[in-house]
Image 1 (cartoon, one colour):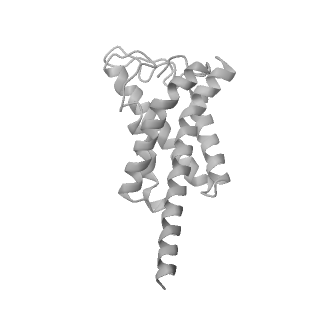
Image 2: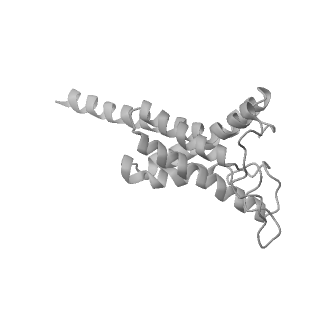
Image 3: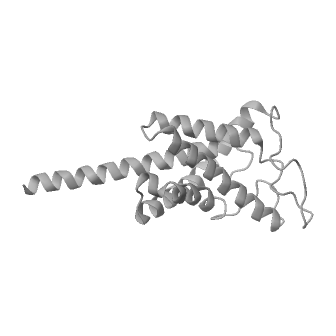
Length: 176
Protein backbone atom coordinates (compact mmCIF):
# COMPACT_ATOMS: atom_id res chain seq x y z
CA UNK A 1 0.00 0.00 0.00
CA UNK A 2 2.82 2.42 0.89
CA UNK A 3 4.55 1.82 -2.45
CA UNK A 4 1.25 2.51 -4.22
CA UNK A 5 0.85 5.83 -2.36
CA UNK A 6 4.45 6.82 -3.17
CA UNK A 7 3.90 5.86 -6.80
CA UNK A 8 0.64 7.80 -6.90
CA UNK A 9 2.36 10.81 -5.32
CA UNK A 10 5.15 10.68 -7.89
CA UNK A 11 2.64 10.40 -10.71
CA UNK A 12 0.79 13.47 -9.41
CA UNK A 13 4.03 15.48 -9.21
CA UNK A 14 5.00 14.24 -12.69
CA UNK A 15 1.65 15.37 -14.11
CA UNK A 16 2.03 18.74 -12.36
CA UNK A 17 5.51 19.16 -13.83
CA UNK A 18 4.25 18.29 -17.32
CA UNK A 19 1.45 20.85 -17.00
CA UNK A 20 3.95 23.50 -15.88
CA UNK A 21 6.20 22.68 -18.84
CA UNK A 22 3.28 22.81 -21.28
CA UNK A 23 2.16 26.18 -19.90
CA UNK A 24 5.66 27.64 -20.17
CA UNK A 25 5.92 26.43 -23.77
CA UNK A 26 2.50 27.89 -24.63
CA UNK A 27 3.41 31.25 -23.09
CA UNK A 28 6.70 31.30 -24.96
CA UNK A 29 4.92 30.46 -28.22
CA UNK A 30 2.30 33.14 -27.62
CA UNK A 31 4.97 35.77 -27.11
CA UNK A 32 7.49 34.60 -29.69
CA UNK A 33 4.99 34.24 -32.55
CA UNK A 34 4.59 37.99 -33.24
CA UNK A 35 8.38 38.46 -33.18
CA UNK A 36 8.96 35.55 -35.57
CA UNK A 37 6.10 36.71 -37.82
CA UNK A 38 7.68 40.15 -38.01
CA UNK A 39 11.01 38.62 -38.99
CA UNK A 40 9.46 36.36 -41.64
CA UNK A 41 6.84 38.72 -43.05
CA UNK A 42 8.44 42.13 -42.55
CA UNK A 43 5.83 44.88 -42.90
CA UNK A 44 3.35 42.64 -44.75
CA UNK A 45 -0.02 42.68 -42.92
CA UNK A 46 1.61 44.60 -40.03
CA UNK A 47 -1.28 46.96 -39.34
CA UNK A 48 -0.87 48.74 -36.00
CA UNK A 49 -3.46 47.45 -33.56
CA UNK A 50 -4.08 50.97 -32.26
CA UNK A 51 -4.42 52.42 -35.75
CA UNK A 52 -1.59 54.82 -34.95
CA UNK A 53 -3.72 56.97 -32.66
CA UNK A 54 -2.24 59.05 -29.89
CA UNK A 55 -4.17 59.55 -26.67
CA UNK A 56 -4.38 62.25 -24.00
CA UNK A 57 -0.65 62.24 -23.19
CA UNK A 58 0.44 62.61 -26.83
CA UNK A 59 1.83 59.06 -26.89
CA UNK A 60 0.55 56.15 -29.00
CA UNK A 61 -1.98 53.88 -27.32
CA UNK A 62 0.29 50.81 -27.79
CA UNK A 63 2.82 51.70 -30.50
CA UNK A 64 3.46 50.59 -34.07
CA UNK A 65 5.13 47.32 -33.06
CA UNK A 66 1.83 45.93 -31.72
CA UNK A 67 0.05 44.65 -34.80
CA UNK A 68 -3.19 42.92 -35.70
CA UNK A 69 -1.07 40.26 -37.46
CA UNK A 70 0.95 39.57 -34.31
CA UNK A 71 -2.07 39.20 -32.05
CA UNK A 72 -4.07 37.04 -34.49
CA UNK A 73 -1.13 34.74 -35.27
CA UNK A 74 -0.22 34.46 -31.59
CA UNK A 75 -3.73 33.34 -30.64
CA UNK A 76 -3.99 30.88 -33.56
CA UNK A 77 -0.55 29.33 -33.00
CA UNK A 78 -1.10 29.03 -29.25
CA UNK A 79 -4.54 27.42 -29.75
CA UNK A 80 -3.12 24.91 -32.24
CA UNK A 81 -0.15 24.09 -30.01
CA UNK A 82 -2.39 23.65 -26.98
CA UNK A 83 -4.63 21.27 -28.89
CA UNK A 84 -1.60 19.24 -29.98
CA UNK A 85 -0.45 19.03 -26.33
CA UNK A 86 -3.79 17.61 -25.24
CA UNK A 87 -4.94 20.74 -23.42
CA UNK A 88 -7.58 21.66 -26.01
CA UNK A 89 -7.67 24.57 -28.40
CA UNK A 90 -9.88 26.50 -25.99
CA UNK A 91 -7.11 26.57 -23.40
CA UNK A 92 -4.64 27.80 -26.00
CA UNK A 93 -7.11 30.42 -27.18
CA UNK A 94 -7.43 31.77 -23.62
CA UNK A 95 -3.69 31.65 -23.02
CA UNK A 96 -2.85 33.30 -26.36
CA UNK A 97 -5.51 35.98 -26.01
CA UNK A 98 -4.71 36.89 -22.42
CA UNK A 99 -0.97 36.76 -23.04
CA UNK A 100 -1.43 39.30 -25.81
CA UNK A 101 -3.68 41.35 -23.50
CA UNK A 102 -0.88 41.32 -20.92
CA UNK A 103 1.62 42.37 -23.57
CA UNK A 104 -0.66 45.21 -24.68
CA UNK A 105 -1.13 46.26 -21.05
CA UNK A 106 2.68 46.43 -20.68
CA UNK A 107 3.00 48.43 -23.89
CA UNK A 108 0.25 50.80 -22.77
CA UNK A 109 2.08 51.43 -19.48
CA UNK A 110 5.46 51.82 -21.19
CA UNK A 111 4.01 54.42 -23.57
CA UNK A 112 2.62 56.31 -20.55
CA UNK A 113 6.14 56.20 -19.06
CA UNK A 114 7.38 57.59 -22.42
CA UNK A 115 9.55 54.53 -23.04
CA UNK A 116 10.15 53.85 -26.75
CA UNK A 117 8.61 50.78 -28.44
CA UNK A 118 10.52 47.55 -27.75
CA UNK A 119 12.34 49.18 -24.83
CA UNK A 120 13.28 47.06 -21.88
CA UNK A 121 11.20 47.10 -18.70
CA UNK A 122 12.08 44.02 -16.62
CA UNK A 123 9.14 42.47 -14.76
CA UNK A 124 6.65 44.67 -16.65
CA UNK A 125 7.71 42.90 -19.86
CA UNK A 126 7.19 39.38 -18.46
CA UNK A 127 4.69 39.32 -15.61
CA UNK A 128 1.44 40.58 -17.19
CA UNK A 129 1.85 38.44 -20.32
CA UNK A 130 2.33 35.33 -18.20
CA UNK A 131 0.16 36.09 -15.17
CA UNK A 132 -3.00 37.27 -17.00
CA UNK A 133 -3.44 34.03 -19.00
CA UNK A 134 -2.66 31.83 -16.00
CA UNK A 135 -5.22 33.60 -13.83
CA UNK A 136 -7.79 33.37 -16.62
CA UNK A 137 -7.20 29.62 -17.06
CA UNK A 138 -6.79 28.83 -13.36
CA UNK A 139 -10.21 27.22 -12.94
CA UNK A 140 -10.12 25.54 -16.36
CA UNK A 141 -6.81 23.81 -15.57
CA UNK A 142 -7.25 23.57 -11.78
CA UNK A 143 -4.04 25.53 -11.23
CA UNK A 144 -2.75 26.16 -7.73
CA UNK A 145 -1.16 29.42 -6.67
CA UNK A 146 2.17 27.57 -6.43
CA UNK A 147 1.87 26.38 -10.02
CA UNK A 148 1.02 29.88 -11.24
CA UNK A 149 3.96 31.43 -9.38
CA UNK A 150 6.26 28.68 -10.69
CA UNK A 151 5.19 29.18 -14.32
CA UNK A 152 5.53 32.98 -14.08
CA UNK A 153 9.01 32.60 -12.53
CA UNK A 154 10.16 30.11 -15.18
CA UNK A 155 8.75 32.29 -17.95
CA UNK A 156 10.54 35.33 -16.53
CA UNK A 157 13.91 33.55 -16.37
CA UNK A 158 13.44 31.95 -19.81
CA UNK A 159 12.61 35.32 -21.36
CA UNK A 160 15.66 36.98 -19.82
CA UNK A 161 17.95 34.09 -20.81
CA UNK A 162 16.59 33.46 -24.33
CA UNK A 163 16.27 37.08 -25.50
CA UNK A 164 20.03 37.50 -26.13
CA UNK A 165 20.02 34.20 -28.05
CA UNK A 166 17.14 35.40 -30.25
CA UNK A 167 19.11 38.59 -30.85
CA UNK A 168 22.19 36.61 -31.94
CA UNK A 169 19.99 34.55 -34.25
CA UNK A 170 18.70 37.86 -35.68
CA UNK A 171 15.13 37.07 -34.65
CA UNK A 172 14.95 39.99 -32.21
CA UNK A 173 16.13 43.51 -33.01
CA UNK A 174 17.47 44.10 -29.50
CA UNK A 175 19.28 41.75 -27.09
CA UNK A 176 16.49 41.92 -24.50
